[in-house]
Length: 463
Image (cartoon, rainbow, N blue to C red; front, side, top):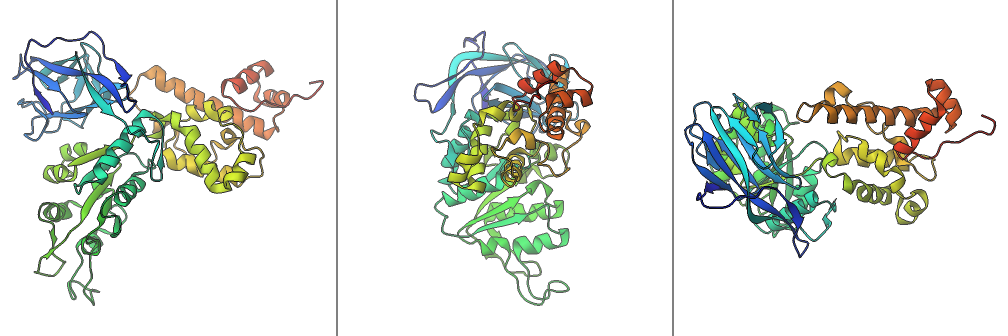
């Protein structure tokens, strides 16, 4: 939570992130937010939790009583790269150093503005811990990066409780796997784990799926039906894509969360339930709250505990580990040793890919490679085949959240890698023929091959 800070605490000129002595946490400087204009001018607040929400709504960690500030305006999040500020779809925008942003990192003395309120980010000498699990896995989830070890730490801690959990993350990051593993590591592990996909169910059937229905409740209801919450008694209900839940059903779900009881469609009787609820979404629910698509009170009931699974592009150190595990899954331990060369030969190429499909995309790529006749398998050569033609166009992947030069460089590298990989494949690795068709110098093509860690091209004597 953000709390008022006394004015005599010192600040530090730099923000640092370093391992603690036991290796189970990262130490990062605490920070304060100094309000320099607006209704709270002169106030100072300490940021002492991993995520702090700012807005005019009373349920925010830092309430900014400013008519130009949205109810859920922005949030400051502690990441392995430092503190990041993210706009939550506010009406008047969030500005960092005078530039409107979607997300940006905060450094010493960084000024940001919400409506007419301006604040300055000031690190302190005191540190706080960003906790990490000592393990590199949690059930079927694997990762040795600090970001994933933090996810494992939260999962280990939350699994022991009965609290409601909200899991956020992009498509393909493993939200359902995490939810199921939390259930398997909980005291409810021997009870049902019921999955409801809120995005795929027909709107007219969602209420019946969740709460059940009484005989004669509607046309076709020829018998009583038990809903997911009753069926999961003693266990866990996983509500996937909860952000797509129809507005008319949100009050009913809120009632379940508050009272732990359900009423079947067409029935007047109320039934008590004993379930744990885990929700997941690829949307930012706080932005949906601002847009009026999701009830704020339901959001707070769902997010008693939150886990944000990072996308694969933010944990690329985990790619070799994941690729090896998937290879063993598809080929078996002994076959994987024969077919899989050192991942390092393809690591640079894989690291430069943006992975819009995240871990699911990597798994699909390894599955395709495992079913090929190529020995040994070069994963980089399959990089643009794993999407089944659904790879987003560059215009669909471009985001203005990051600097122009960074995004442009990534797209150029992605094009070069894809083009050279396909070019060499067409010419069976013959660099001279490949360069000739492409209309480029052979030496330049060789440089590109080395740059992206592709296998050495075949040179034909006399070329």
